[in-house]
Image (tube, rainbow, N blue to C red):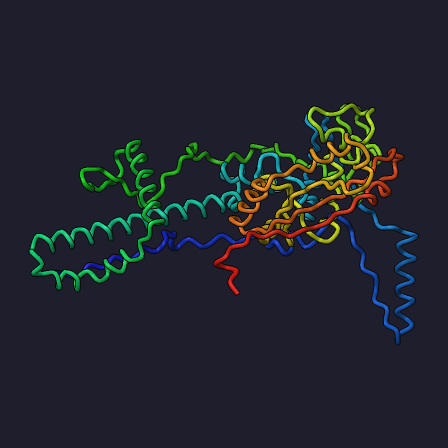
Length: 441
């Protein structure tokens, strides 16, 4: 019997087409924060002239202080959100610290570039398109792998059936002639069998919708294996670019409340304007405003601030990690409060996921039964909740960080934000899922 060899196909790649160049993210995001930094000359102990150079630099900064650009944002009380509409401000806040999210994009505000490319006005690719292409290639590879494994199984079954019909006289030749098929079948595991069955059923449903595709008859059933994954998105016909068409940017940058207050109070590079009154909101008034809008529905602005307001608890953690150099982004995608990047989302995946838990260890919260009940309700967590969150982070290769924020006793707010924030303490606990097979001594 002739030898039958089934080799795994190489992933489908377009030949002759150069790979698009990637933007120089090291240069684009070379500044970690949207602040102007002016280096001072070095002081050389054995050179007295260096001291004069430093003194002149300080004197120049005092007499002619450098201009720090302050960006503007709009606060919408109806949606409790902050929007940045100026294109230069959007570019500065995203490129210097990865602040905010594009209202029409996944993260980076790139709607205008995608729209220009769709209309034929731009040839460069965006991050969303790169992600889509990578996922399509992955689906194609899985379909081709499932088809190869299915053919290997059929070949083995055909060889065994031929051996039974011949009465075992050609058993030795059949085994020698099917070494390659046997090697391929040995690699077939239960997990891949389930994957092949699922992908075949998916291909069958696609074949029912498009009967013109190629198909193979297996045990009386028609299974379609398409070499190219059919896209589920329908695009319009290519239109000729109109030079007279002026395409405006309809996207704005949406900031979280924690990012807004950090830019206003922590860095001083943002001013928030009330949409209704068109007045600038100072930091002393912005803090109670954001605290009241951290509830749903929003609390009355005349109510006193609570020491365990959701906004001030989350901002204490946000300010803590930003102050030590982490890029803090929302972790709602992974079921957490925050995720931490070392440099930013364009360089690597997030390393840690943060869960915020308020802690009421101050004796004030144990004085009365009402306070004890309130503290118990706020700290209530179940062990299966923690297990689920930790399991999710283990699947996405992130380490879970539990941040306990010590809630102080309530005091009247006098407008001094620094005094308020100094009363909060953040404790970090790193939690990892213990796997016996990977933790053997």
